[in-house]
Image 1 (cartoon, helix red, strand yellow):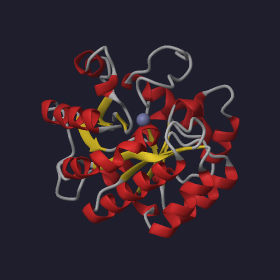
Image 2 (spheres, helix red, strand yellow; image 1 turned 45 degrees about the vertical axis):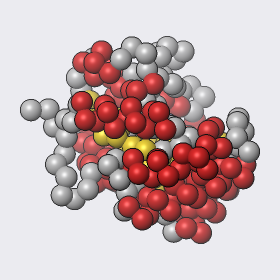
Image 3 (cartoon, helix red, strand yellow; image 1 turned 90 degrees about the vertical axis):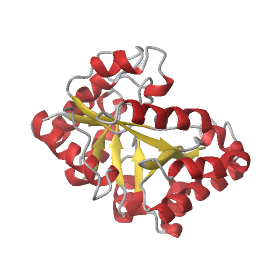
Image 4 (cartoon, protein in one colour; image 1 turned 135 degrees about the vertical axis):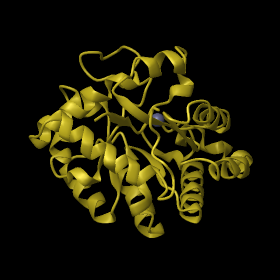
Amino acid sequence: MGWVDTHCHLQLDERGPETLLSRAGQVDWLVAPGVDLESSIASLDLAERYPDRVLATSGLHPHDAGSWATDGTELAELARGASAVGETGLDLYRNLAPREDQIASFEGQIELALELGKPVIVHCRDAFADVFSILERTGAGPSAVLHCWTGGTRWTRRFLDLGVTFSFAGPVAFETGETIRLGAALVPPDRALVETDTPFLAPPPHRGEPNEPAWVSLVGAALAAVWGMGADEVAMLTSANAARVFLSPNQDRPSRG
Ligand SMILES: [Zn+2]
């Protein structure tokens, strides 16, 4: 049983998809989120080139939320042929785009995901309260994948009630990740995914190196320790969740022939 890396920016990595995919023998398939127009087009190209390994998304990252006004229509068009919308969300830590632009872009992408019946990948940094209220108000919780979840027990409980799916990344394995692990302990295994966020956030013992999809198993092993189960079981559970979240009912699961 292999892993599914549900957040891997293969198209943003200069080492190239061929190299990274060939090194990720235990990764059955992955999701390559777009962060702007160019990377969303590249994501769809990758999915076409590797139909058995890569799923595409179309989205605009909160850092670039100002472009929603100009690029939103084209991103929405691309989303029709993608498996998910995003990554979108709010980043009030780096605040690279004005808050009101981030909210407009986030709400626009939520609306799009609900209209298309596709999941929406959500980036949430220093923005738990705002992301919570937007998901609550729009009713999009069950469609939301909270990527690189870093919430502790309080926010994990509240978001669980909204019906979201939590995706865990390198920080759950960091030495400083105790708060995240306490949150993860509350997440039922059928509501969890694993990801690398390649090329960022490499898990130990690779911290500081460019991340790659092969290391999703290190994230999974950290979750396995939290849940007191074997890594194989975590791979099986999270891969089944990924298929349920990202593949439409009549779509074949990507599989290497
Ligand atoms: Zn990302």
